[in-house]
Length: 125
Image (cartoon, rainbow, N blue to C red; front, side, top):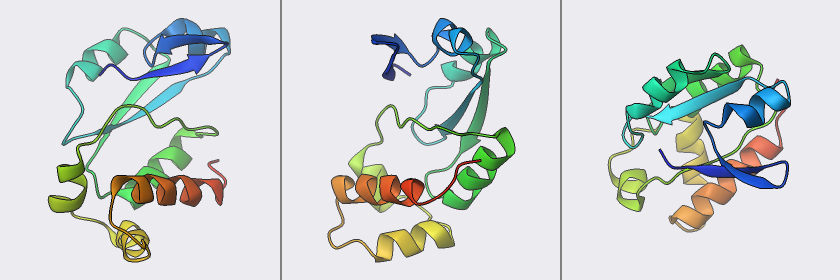
């Protein structure tokens, strides 16, 4: 996984423990079974600040439960999910099905916007 995000004005890998450790943060990774490279487990095993949780694309309810269990307070979406995966082979749970049914247009921009709005209206911890 080559996802990147900005931490203290520098771009780092999601596995740069210096970023999380410097801020005293633990990192909970929600890895998508259908997309994420299994190397993520090896990388996470080398850093006690990182915990990996494997989820399928349609498991929004399980993602919520995982974030609550881990005490997640801030979330970053990183990486890429192929458009074909999102709209053809996904098996949505009831929460995601409801979210998908409310989309005006079925494209990745609308879906990501809906997911971002979903998280913005909820407390993560």
